[in-house]
Length: 266
Image (tube, rainbow, N blue to C red; front, side, top):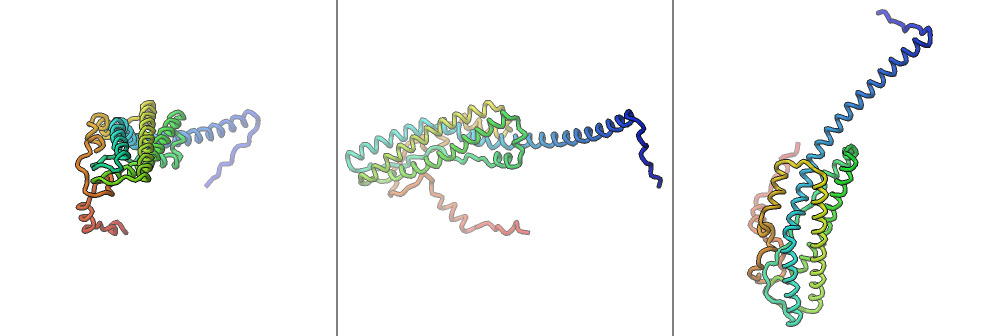
């Protein structure tokens, strides 16, 4: 097979011509590669936005429900404060039924964490990236305050029962719990409002299922959300109750029919 040797360059004009051809070819190849990479990252960003929107819609449902039921929380805490004030005078807690619990849910961040870890977040517009980061920081603070709120309400549930003596030590703990429950509730209300404002400014495109969940949170009566908005009901026969209702039948059924996790093994 004949091999064609490159022609010798006889002058500067021919050299510059060959040089320009080489530079143009390299530049074209690099531009094409960058174009392909840009298209790839744009596709990744679109997919990431969809996943993030679904995750944020879940956080919005929590924020909306929490804000809508805030008055129920305040009324219940006022009621418990009056019960405790009266008990401190008589030395006994009166019979008290289920006091309910503020709206609780997990505020997920897994989709956002995954997007950041995959470097996709660096290809978001800078302003949107900052807004999303701030929104997820609010979600994390909501999660943290929820843990403090749960601890406080667990203490308040020691008031639920048929009636008992109230000693000074128990009274002091209950008053601390009342203050913590009220503070956590008000902090969460503020954070929930901030989250809604930030998400509104980001113009995220929510799917139909996401919008349906948000709409339900906005329109459903508060009494369908939490028992806290309902009367306390009849006192239980004993103390040591919890805000989580018993699921004895379901647990027994599960214990008798445990799933076989080996089916997914190769």
